Image (cartoon, rainbow, N blue to C red; front, side, top):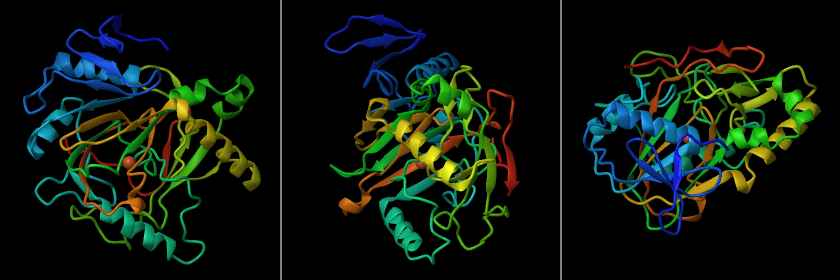
Length: 325
Ligand SMILES: [Fe+2]
C-alpha cells in the first residue's frame, strides 16, 4: 500500500507520522489509533487535514478517552464538512437532530421484528450485520463518527473491513467483470418504520438507489468494492442465480479476516471511518450479552458515488440524504 506518512522506528509497533499527528497502526491493512489530540478542544484545519490523510491510509481511526459533549461531537464532525441529519429514517436526539443515539436493545428489538415479518418482507439475506452506512440513498455519507457513551466491559465490538484491499485482491478477470456493473440498494423491512414522517417533515422511505459495484474513491482515486451486504438486493442485468453467486463471492472477499480490524470499545472511545471505503459490522455479538451499551453517531455529508466507467449513482425511490450544515 502507498502511504502518505513517514515510517519511523518507535518501540514495539510501527508508528507513522503526519505533519501534526502520529498514528499507531493496528493491522497492516486497516485501522490506526491516534493519540495526543483532545477532541474537547476545536481541532485546527491542519489537524483535520492530517486525520483525513490518516483515513486515506488506514480507513478507520480510533481515539481513546475523549470526554466530549454533544456540541463538541458535532464541532469535531464539522471540521470535515457539513453534517447530515442523524438518519434518513430514524430520528436524531430532540435537541441535536444530527446525533443518532443507539442502544444495544434496539438491535435486539429490530432483529426480532424483522425475523417475525411475513415471508417476502424479510431482509434479503443474512450477511451477519456487515454494511456500509446509508447506501439506500444515492448520496451516502462520507464519514461516520461514533462515540461510546455507555460501554460494557466486554461485548459490543465493531468490525471494519477495507474495501480497497478487497478490490485489489480480486483477480484481474473478476475486476474487469465487476468494474462495469451496478447494484440496487434498498431499505428492507428491517429498516422501515411503518411510513412515519420524520420530525422535520421528510419521508422515511422506502428508499432505493442504484450504485456502481466498483466505486472510484472521490479523494484518492482508488477503486474499491462498493458492496453493502446489508442493502444490496441484486446486481443489475444479471440473472438471479448469477447475481446471488457473484454477491456471495464478493461478500466472502470483502470480509476476509486479513482486511479487517476488530475494535474493542471503552467508555469515551471515538471512531471515525471513511464510509466511502469501509464496510463494518457491529455490535457483532449483541445477542450474546445483555449488558447496556449506547453509542452516538454523526455523519459527514457525502456525494453521489461514481464508477470507473463514469456511472454516477441515482435515486430510484425516495429523496437524497439532506444536509444540515
Ligand atoms: Fe453502521
